[in-house]
Image (cartoon, rainbow, N blue to C red):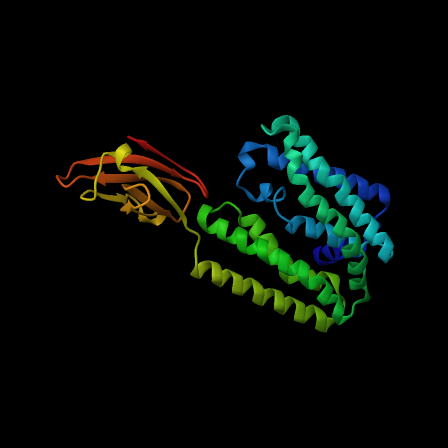
Length: 290
């Protein structure tokens, strides 16, 4: 029953223009809310306001439930023409950028224009031919780039981003299964998607994310090259005192490998210790002496 219901999403929905417009408004409004609510920042929900993977899903849904190439192209175009400006418009009163937030919109407008040819060509996936998978493949690859990005973010900020990473992985494998009827196309498509997921996962595991930063100067910390420094829990990464030639000063260099809270210990040659609370995010940090 669930399988049939999911399959129906890709070709069994009567997608009228009214339904499309309502869907565009809801998608735009929800995305704006996900971008506005502070607690959702750096989560899977916020990803919808930044990258393509969920919007690719919407695009494929529209294509598969359209009645012709032209219908598909126009509906994809109108959906994005409504939803994307709405994302920014709703955010304006809540953003410190105000109307300047629309400076990010031209990027999405280019993709909105590209929806016309993509929607037109994408409709041929409904022919259920092997070359239909070649039409789908660029969307799978784009979803793959998002998977790699968010799996890497998940590694650093567990359990954040797990939902969007799983969504990307599942769609890479199941798009061909849900779109096509031919057993051979579905099987090959699922295998190719699965191999891509495994390959990208291994790549992320072999080369995990590292956030490197100079977190304290010798002037701020009152240390020199004879001091030692370390994190109380090395799962968060490592720190060392290193000479920075550009500014002719010793700095504490950190290579963070996980988000969270830990303690940094700065020890003098005499054994005196100072402790600092360190809060780590993916691209920022705070250090405060205890």
